[in-house]
Length: 183
Image 1 (cartoon, helix red, strand yellow):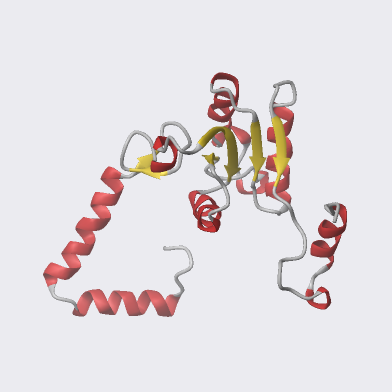
Image 2 (cartoon, rainbow, N blue to C red):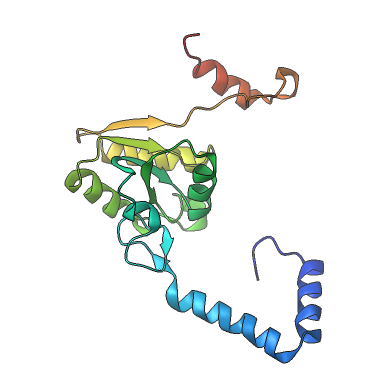
């Protein structure tokens, strides 16, 4: 039922909960209820928050004119962990995946277009995952915003720092060659 939890892990968790004192197990149940009751999407970017705005949107030190578009909140957390991005985010809450029944109408695309048109956004950084669906979603968004005066960029791709060419796959090498920069 939980993503990433296999049968053995689920059995261990169930056994732990059955053996735990009732107050501990019920405290966990209450914590889950509290999360479901209090946490919701930010009204601006769709990151998870307990307030009207998430801490990133509410931070006056962030540049609201540079918006990084991600598929999920977990992607936002990964980018934030780098400490390198000082703009704000927009969480799509998925990616276009027709075979999974996920069309553009199920994403937060209308809100993104509104932000670009009403909040003075000057750059969109596409940070969708480098998959067929992620790239398709990024292309769809760039087409939606083609007539707007906004710069659209994409995260660099290629060979990670500290790796060896011998161990890079074909796609990584192809991305690295296509995205090469001046030295």
